Length: 483
Image 1 (cartoon, rainbow, N blue to C red):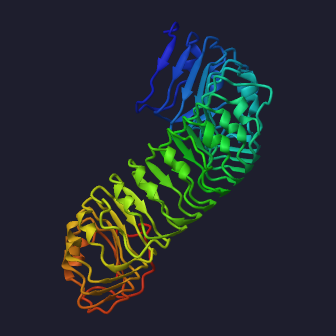
Image 2 (cartoon, rainbow, N blue to C red; image 1 turned 180 degrees about the vertical axis):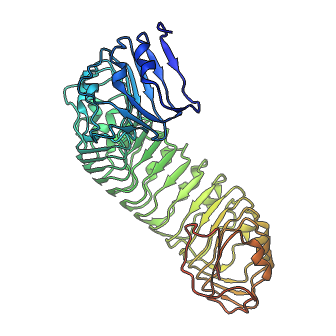
Image 3 (cartoon, rainbow, N blue to C red; image 1 turned 90 degrees about the vertical axis):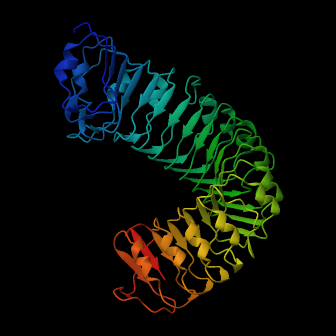
């Protein structure tokens, strides 16, 4: 065994300690992969000191059960790694010093994965300085802070994957980031403290397929260079920033775009026609902005849309008839706009699972076309001016788990059809004009504690409490009734 060159025990259920003597004695090892197990105890990387041939070391996804000591004072590695992965472990438990100084001795790294490893300090730009052939760098979920420094005198042509998300990196992105990393396919800097404007040099990343800068504090407009030159983008996520102006430049060349998330910003004006060039779009999420005007007729030309989220804007109705061309919608959220007075009955709901139309100034009776929504899981019609009776066919929507009808003008009795909805988790009929007796069969829907709020005129069946219970749509109880 002393001549063993590769040791790969990944994706098993091994537990217990990793014998340091095992690694210390196998000095011919070039390839060590211990990932995705349930190892416990402790391991010192100093046991690899004499493995001069070592090129690959990977110990990732170990569920934080293993303590790894990486900074013994006398340790000087004799190897030059190409691949190093160490994540979801407890590093340097007794020193609280997680800097990985030994990596400063490495100069030929091609892939580094150190996610959820507790790294502290500034972004390690020395990793890029020392390893010009680096192709993949994953540092997500650490405690890196300070400014995001990148070497300005390098072009890292081999770097295709860069993820430093979920840290505390702040200040602006270097204006030259697109020149340093021109061949990136994946860039994720989400969940940091970055601010100022998105650099125009991002347009130099012409191979970029995924860009996620969400949950930061970027300001200004989306750079025209990004919209024009990043034609390979499949996923663009800029949610939860302070971006403003038009949601996309007038001219956009995002022809490969499938997922566009611009929610929770400060965009104004109409919905940009630049989206039309993204004919492969599957998800459009522009919730929580200040977009105005009517929904454009051309929205129906984006035939493949699966998710359309427009809630909490200043959009007004009526909805264009071209909306009925969206035959594959699974999730539709038009809430908190002024898109009434009604929804076109030709809207295809046969495969729709999530429909949110709360606070949309809808009038008239319960939308009849919803009787075809056999896949519906959530139906939210709260805070409109719908009237008439709740239809008996509601009981045919067997997949329905959440039915929210609060704050309308529904009248008459609760239909017995509701008792057929065996999967129901939340039912809210409060603040209507319903009357009569509550069907006793509703108690058969419960799978645990029942929360009930009465705000209609009912005869209460015996054995049901009538006290005030706060609204809770977050799953505290397995079944909630608000009536």
